[in-house]
Image (tube, rainbow, N blue to C red):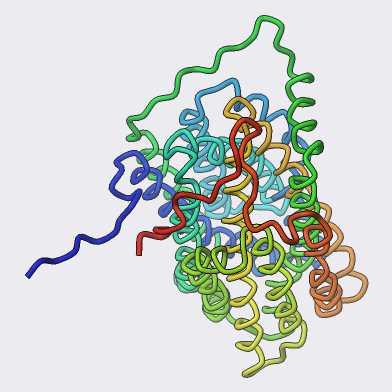
Length: 430
């Protein structure tokens, strides 16, 4: 009897495997701190609605402050080195939180500083990360690579919050943040094991940072398809940040959930991301690439209305089911549109394209976090969540009203004819 070898796909590649493991460890740790940091503010420091909203604002403010120049800088550097330094820097910053708490000197101002500086390093890491993947796996395997990494993210979102909730109850929230600090160190070690090296990009004698930033902006804003994706994602993220600013506070103060149950709540919701990573290929094959982008958002966003409708008891878990459905849509949307962006963009512009997109779509999040804090302080957490959930149902419109609405196959680079992704047959290595 002959046994079939498991379809591992890119996981057979040594370098991609190191990135995959590094991302797995880092994502799991990040899930711990994403729950622990707000709980440090809410439970340990007794923060107000506005202070929690400001913390969320500062976590994403870096995308506005350094988002555009980060792309130009990354295009001048070896991206592997940017990843390693970003991991180690975040480890040091997050490690300062439990140390300060242990010494009795932790304040909300330190949390603000850590959130802002970690955000700056995350900007550089994320731009380098999305720009490094085409070099590592090739443009014809981007859907497979992105989908496998989405499995990592989704799996960590399932296990991470539950682990975080138990860890916070066992050792308190400040020390739970230390877990994320350690995870970034381990992630850096695995990235360091990647063998494939990039040549250092050549810098033109007349290179100018402002002109390089402008070139990235022109590439994104001059393409109607990229503009519509940026508008859709930016609007969805703006409203998501409004909601995120109040969600944990709502679960603690309005619904009376313990840290362990809050972790379970987010784990149930995040399980949808794993489902999304496995169904993205069938969805794209059935609907086409363009329709898959807007349908994934339009169909799942209304499930967000279940959160502000939640009450203590069984309706809490109905809201978690709403998060589950939204997570499916987010993963299908992200894998499809990110793979398209990476394949469309010339190698020399990858960093600037990714940075420009991050500036446009993540730059709305500090605005949303601040707005969530203001609305929460004025009208309360539940009303703020209602406003965000209703408005988020309309976020798909920029893509729906663009040529993407009916495009089954999205175009490749200008010098390459449109073609279907070669990896469509083996995403996730089933």
